[in-house]
Length: 119
Picture: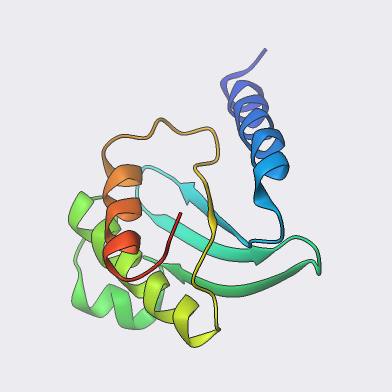
């Protein structure tokens, strides 16, 4: 089994547990690479993305030199909380996507909580 297949299995296992506890709340999904981090607020019932933020956005790249730091993850967490509140979302379930809740993932989650998202 390749490392990518293992990661996909972990992500599916996390999502299966989230579906049981979601009860109508949108999902805050995180995608992390070695150079960037992206996050989306997804309404699985309707199949649409309500809000998104990424270190690859033009205005974000102008402010920050590197998208692979915890500082960048913190900034993205605050940005997604702001955009989600504009979209009318206050409560979400956190989908860490099979990544360990540590480092950039934890920094993003803490910043999103500080920004007003509840999960």
